[in-house]
Length: 185
Ligand SMILES: O=C(O)C[C@@H](Cc1ccccc1)[C@H](O)SCc1ccccc1
Ligand code: NI
Image (cartoon, rainbow, N blue to C red; front, side):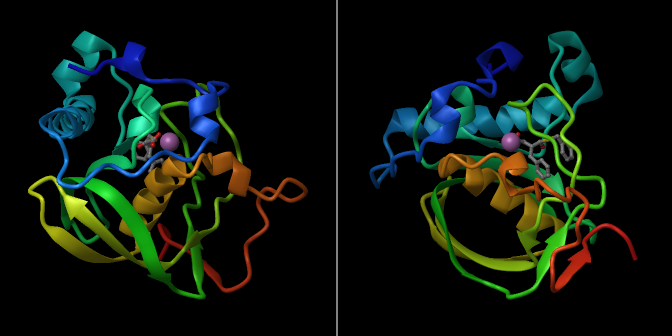
């Protein structure tokens, strides 16, 4: 079972390097690891388990965050239309994106960052992601809004990019051009 002691924190070089492609078909070990990553996120959202194991709530996790330089991510969350996203992905790749940007008006956090970092994180408003899911299927995901933000946050981890790298240093709350907040009507 993955717990917070397994989560690598900022300052560890693995978080600032690109991760390596997972060989396809994935090994049993890679599949097992991805299943554990999904379970960690589900556990982190379960009040009793999270309290018992002192887990910080999360909606996504990337393999570098557990010290594995492999292009694997796991997500478990509902978007603002209550659509459930719950799966693991090998070698996810953003194959196209919108010109428009979006951002969370509350900013972002990270399980690998034990501090608040204020500011808007500009993300593409819509992305198309190709990946291989936990079941071994080649999938093409067309994502927008909150789902697009979560997937971009996790895929950034595979490229050694932290959310605060994207915050405007001079004007953290500068609203990017062609941007609309994702969580306010
Ligand atoms: O560190 C991670 O990769 C997990 C992040 C992913 C994330 C952060 C901000 C915006 C979208 C995705 C954690 O989920 S941070 C904690 C959290 C918990 C619930 C909702 C949003 C963020
Ligand atoms: Ni993160």
